[in-house]
Length: 326
Image (cartoon, rainbow, N blue to C red; front, side):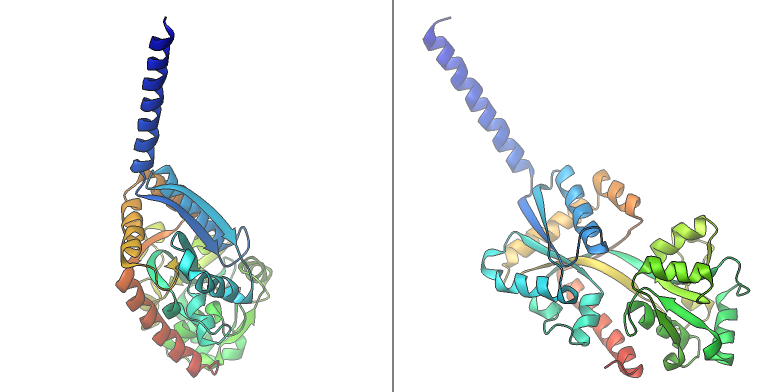
């Protein structure tokens, strides 16, 4: 083979390689996303970011994903950082959830969701009230009756501080059942796992927790779910009534998780992210991640996300004022 012919073949191969690389790059709708996580590795925010990044990249919607954990200030450190680097953060999305609303109302940090660019609420976990399977309390009606007869006889625990999400959910449910929400005898635990241990050991009579955690223990016959804060019964537990069905009027709540861009993010970039998440839901890669984690698909993009957050802020803020936390 002549040198000329060999050089020609090499050139063709190189050109073909470039074409393949170019096609691979073009296949991704977004070249890269850097996920900013306001908490440590292994937590709910971290799992949401990494699971979402996994689905987006494996489905070819995003070329590559990177992750940065930034704990501190109840999530405030990451929010302040994203605002500070806004002019060079087009590729950065911060994951967050209901606590951004609660902690902003509590002034744990000075910013709120309004200081960021809403991309989308993507998943959610409903709340549930559960008791030990050995408990004499067989249904929510019995728990509500005991609470209204003598609130001090019912210890309700949760994996957050007084005034935190688990407390607020328990108070909302009891209020919906006709009780006085300020009478809830709430026992705070440092985390959800410790709170569940408190229930199983008999330290508390009932627990306010996430449905995802509750359903796994219910399958193991360790707890009985009294009600769930969804609008309709959930496919994973069709025998469990909603709290509204069980007698707690208006007791609907979801701990959403979603993503925000930096303030001032262009409308074009915001739309590109929303389109990417929209496309993600129809992929088998997303279904694999979602099913593995027991997430519920709750998609609120752009302006719908902002409207959802404003509504949740009004509802949570009103309850916090009633309970004396604001």
